[in-house]
Length: 286
Image (cartoon, rainbow, N blue to C red; front, side, top):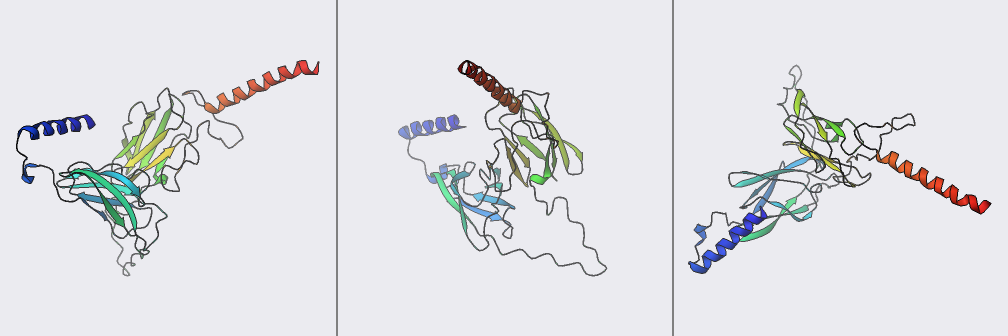
């Protein structure tokens, strides 16, 4: 993408050297100042917000300050006509009545521009009124009121091993996607029940020190898991996948057949160091 844009810029420069400068109508990209809005206006901190951006020729992206959303969100935007839309999970610590800033940037007819999105959490949303006596409340349409979170993702194991497998079961009223730079390939989900999806991913034979797995419920947000305990990739309340064997609850560690276990390797290294230490001490006693 970067190379193709660079080539296009070089060609435009060469053309301008030989031709008259074209008028504003010659540019296909919109030249209006980009603007960002969000919905719904009434939300609870931690909910997902839709972000709608107009005035951009290229896909918008985060550009600096991000006081509203979890790290890296919104991660992508989709174009529909003249507008770009994306979704991001808001931080749980936002306070009602305060205004928070997130800056975006995009390519326009006047070059790359940055622009703000101000978000003000409303007062606490009142509960819906009860149904009149004898008239039951109608069933909501599929997905209405659904909030995607960590409780909607079930992992088959919390152990990450080179070449190992990871089963992922997700509750989501739309389509599901799981991505990681450490996967051999992106797993394909199959629907196994109403709003239930299941897939199995396989890790590469060589893994980095930190492995991240992102699970997305299309239209409802995403959650991120990490192998580094305590390292928060998303808003407070995120969960980690610790490296090593999972605790079975009876004092033992469950092993896996999919690859070497980091915890067992560390234990072996400590045992070897202890033996060498004992051998060095023996001549001193003699």
